[in-house]
Amino acid sequence: MESIAALVSKIDGWLWGFPLIILLFGTHIFLTFRLRFIQRYTLKAIRLSVKKDEFGEGDVSQFSALATALASTIGTGNIVGVATAVGLGGPGAVLWCWLTGVFGIATKYSESLLSVKYRVKTKDGTMAGGPMYVLEHGMNMKWAGVLFALFTSIAAFGIGNMVQANSVASMVYESFQIPPWITGIFIAAMTGLVILGGIKKIAKVCDILVPFMAFFYAIGCLVLLIIGFDTLGATVSLIIRSAFSAQAAVGGFAGAGVMMAMRYGIARGLFSNESGLGSAPIVAAAAQTRNPVKQALVSATGTFWDTVVVCLMTGLVLVNSGFWQEGLKGAALTNKAFSAIPKIGPLILTVGLLTFVFSTILGWSYYGEKAVEYLLGKKAIFPYRILWIIFVFLGSVFSLNFVWDLADLFNGLMAIPNLISLLILSPVIVAETKKYLWDDNLEEIDHTPIKVVE
View 1 (tube, rainbow, N blue to C red):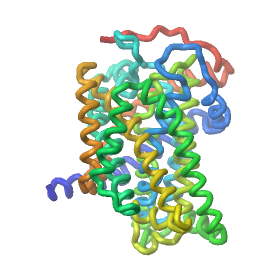
View 2 (cartoon, rainbow, N blue to C red):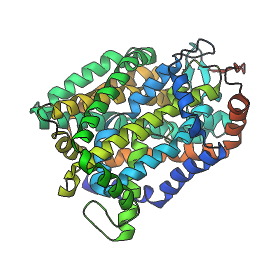
View 3 (cartoon, one colour):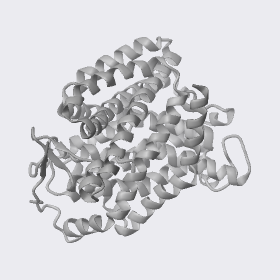
View 4 (tube, rainbow, N blue to C red):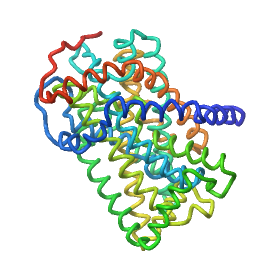
């Protein structure tokens, strides 16, 4: 097992070196310029996200699709993931994580647009979409769609299940000495109550949970930033300087420092906002929307909230605390930073993490389910849901350093076919954007028939 873990860690380190960083960040930048800085429509997209659109076909509202996507992205990546990036890559990792979010808005927009455009309808009337359908119907590369679905179904058990459950079980034990198996049973039971009801039940819970958890956690971060306001300016300066200098977690020479900051910042940025990963477009395809561009704009706000806002706040809090210099990382670093709020600090962090984790488990259960449905058909959905619940419990009680590396590895493998499809189909993305957004036809209904599949 140690040999396998070492091999996975080695492959993970190579994949998240220059190859994937160039492909991922390069795609973010390419699409940003190709779409004339689509980020400038963020405020418009936020307004659209809170409006109900009763026209067009879909299983859930635009906001419900966004809430479900946010549920899966706002998770341990925003708390433990950012802390891991700072602990291993130094304060400069915060800037690279943030830039991944800023430029990643264009990628999230693009992949969501394609997923709505190439979505299909099953015999029972439900929508199915995502990069696997884009690869199959948009590029005539079903084999690549199968690979993406396979990577997704495996990655889901890491990034969206065991890693999440383990993080909250560890935090609860550290803060309140509650045994992990008790936390595991509780989370698994709550998960079962929701996911057995399908996407509409998941979306309904996320509609309520996401605004609450984001507001609750943001208040905690703001309190900490106010407490440490005197050093905040120096912290911002340190983050910027460290992103391009030798300041790694505990030193190092220039090349290694910058590379470590980039690697962990970008990797955790993707882990958090999933722009380019291809996961969020799976639920975007289920949205009731007039045309692909309108839903794509709404979906793109997920990256803005997740990384540009929430991850940045976490990063500022962690670096400003100074505890990263003691060699702390992950949950231990975050817990130490929040302890600056007398008595209730650990409680705020635990409640925030618990809600983040639970929502992520719900969102990723749907992603994995749709990937399995693509591979094996609807008959596999119920067994998959049962297996998902079991693994929530297992993740709570097992040590998961190996699973973190495995999650990063399959995240990267998911991203590759998705990013390639975005680059090749960029003319389609531009044409749709021109038709509906640049030519001011955003309220026009797309009457293109949706293909019905078995």
